[in-house]
Amino acid sequence: MLAPNIIKWSKKSQPPSKPPEKEDPTEALKQQLVHKPQEAKQPVAQSVEKVPEYLGNSNIMEIHYLKNIKQACQIDRISEENKGFFDNNEEAKKAIASVG
Image (tube, rainbow, N blue to C red; front, side, top):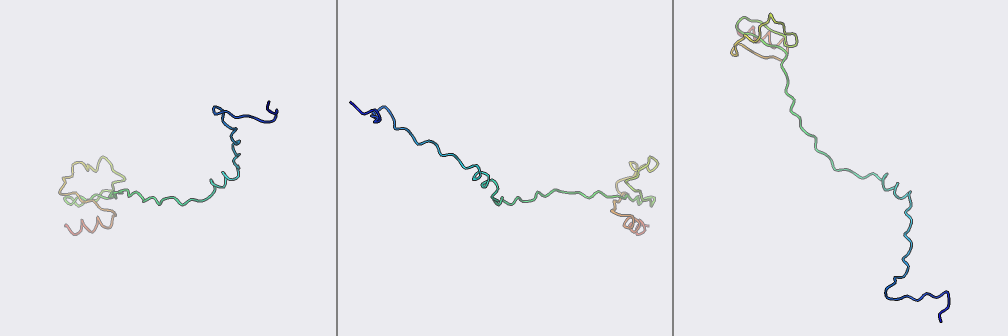
């Protein structure tokens, strides 16, 4: 007969496994706080089209400010060959003066 404090193992039974080691919560926090360099992201090029502010009519030598269009301007009636778009008023004045 076996002593009461001796365990006999059979092939079917497994020896008791070690209890899982408890993770140190501070170690997990340290891993989160460690600065890991991220891959440099390439900037996405966005096409920005500059919108002109002035429209010159070379037929009647008028300059229209496109941010303040009025019905009396009748911009839709200006023919394409007489239209000139400009970024500022000085450019428009110079172009109109050079035409006529």
